[in-house]
Image (cartoon, rainbow, N blue to C red; front, side):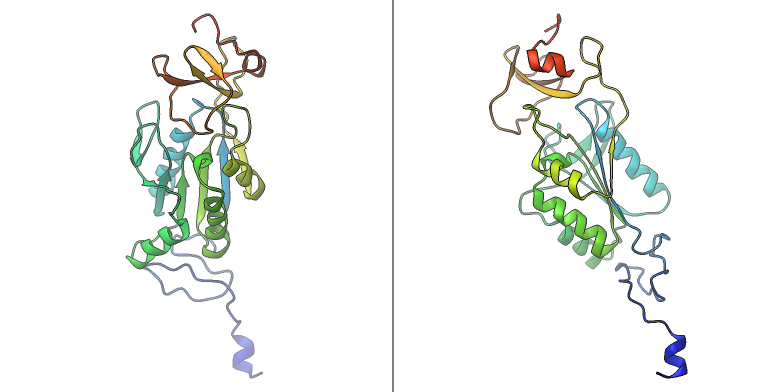
Length: 238
């Protein structure tokens, strides 16, 4: 080994591809967004309906974009039935609709190929994604240094974990329950999402059926405490 070779460390870090490439150095180098390479993380924020998951997703996107980071927003089966993230307090943002055939890694690579940098993904309604999409999220973090922030329900109307949510619990670097407290009609903390059809709690059917929490919906959802979820008691206003 020559003296010059000994003085020049071999770079094992994968530079973050993008329109502003030209990174040099080794593992201590920073990406084009100013953050250290290999510092990305997969984070899953979860909670029952009405706890503000989509609102937090939009706030997260705003906070990162305000600091010069560039991201993509994705969703699946938003309540608006359109390619956007919407919240019940009136916020909205355009989004990429996730389909069975969509590869999140290809989505990022295509953006890079078009000269658009991607530092992070906001994945709303992540519990409705396929398990394969969660694996792709982990690969984006580990192999591409892209932060992924996923937001979604943990359990369905039967109180069973969604497959994608279960995989997120297993793979995420950080899992956090959203702290906005949702109340059952009795005043206890609401934990479970009951599906209501014809004024009654139903416990059989397709895992994913589009509905909302408004009383007038043909199929609606109501957040209940465990006691009233188990008894099927929707309260005096039902």
